[in-house]
Amino acid sequence: MKHRKCYIISFYLLIGAGILLAQNTMVTYIEGSPQRKDNKGLLSLLDYGNQLATGESVITGKTDLAELSQGNTSTIRIKPNTVFTIREIELGGQKEQVLTTTVGAVSMRFNRLAGKEPRVGTVSTIAGIRGTELTVFAGPDGSTLFIVESGLVSVTAAGSTVDLREKEAVEVPAGGPPGEKYSVIGRELDFSSWAQGKTEELLADPQSTLEKSVTLLTQFKAGLSEWVEKYEKARIESDAAVKKMGEITDTEAQKKYQDEVWFPLALQTGNAILNYRYYTLSALSLRRYVLGPLYMQVRTRNMLKQDGSYQKFMERYRQIIQDFQTTFEPYTNITDY
Amino acid sequence: MKNITNGIIARALIGVLFLVGLVSCSTLPPSQNPGRILSLIKALNTESVPDLMKRTSRPFLLDGEIIIREADIETLWQNLRDSQFTFTEADIQSVTPVKPDLYRLFGESKDVEYFFRKYIPKDGAIVELNTAHGTFYIITGSRTWFTPKIIGFTSKGVTP
Image (cartoon, rainbow over all chains, first blue to last red; front, side):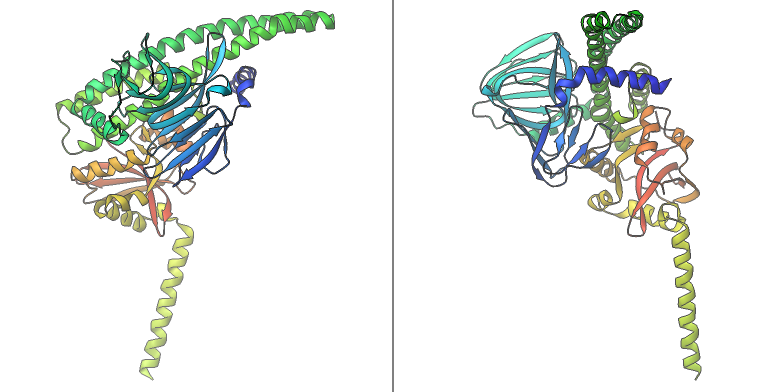
């Protein structure tokens, strides 16, 4: 039964993701030993010429660097200590690739003349871009900093949008709307010192970082529940269409019904899966690269002095993880881990 | 004559010890060999963070959390060093080759279950260790030379 469900989901995903399977991303430069996490969830060393498909990640260590190229449309430079994932979401009826910096720093350059640009995002935001060169910092507390070298970037988070132009930057806190944008002319923005500042802030008040993550998880939960509902509805309609299709005896009429009724429903089902998976994987990324490291920090700093604030943190953490397990875990599979 | 006899006996003894060593090596992987595990614990208690990184498998399991990034694992060891935590007065209570259900020692989540299925090698073991700071469960597996690597740890009673 479980296998059957997997096959059905894979089938709908294949229908939904068909276009983007062709838009692979190639590894063009490597320093050190960056790792690749493939769609089976397996870790291996990244190599020159590797083709990365949607859903795959690059994980760099402290002395690693990787550069990716998407034909003549974009160049992506992944800096040390970064997790970068190529993801996909359906927005307004269209599938969009989201180049996601989960944690760390990534610089991207897009060719204005090469057609439609993908979206750029982090665990908490998605940005639309137009002919742009930009850098994304994703902090250990789930916050994001967008820095635009050239072009235009529209950053949306928590229902608010900020438009950035050349030499402008904006910071987005985890779970919150974008802050005030500012000019970066004459300012050197370095990821290490920015991330260090964020780490110091989160260590000064780990409880507050937990609550910001809860705000984000609540947003993912709302997205998940909306798309699971749409999936269930589309699946029931699609199954009914399959049944009806089987009852049609005339081959031509059956083909017409398949093209005009069943296929759009199957596509709708595939898109709904794509989107509920997007929210599930966002939540999983938040747990893996923000909550998990935060837990590690609090736990290992307090191995020998587990005072009241430590106990309070751990109690809240346990509640969050329990909620995560009931809300998101049922929509994950072994390849996600 | 006596010297020659002593020499022969000494060589024979060395040969026997070598054979015993070989036999023990071939039957028990370092990750399940108490002597090798104690060497790992000693290294964990005394070595520098860069050396500990070489003894640490990635991804790493801390309680119920999977830690993937090199920088985060480095921070983990640095924090333990800074807080002066060691597995001091370590005494091995048991060494159990990893079995499917043992993941529950680390938590009930899919994270832990899948970590055990995906990231622990075939020679993996769970070591129950009594220390001055309480009981710890350490996952060992694979090796650097003759010493096993650490793949994760948790402790009794203090995990969320």
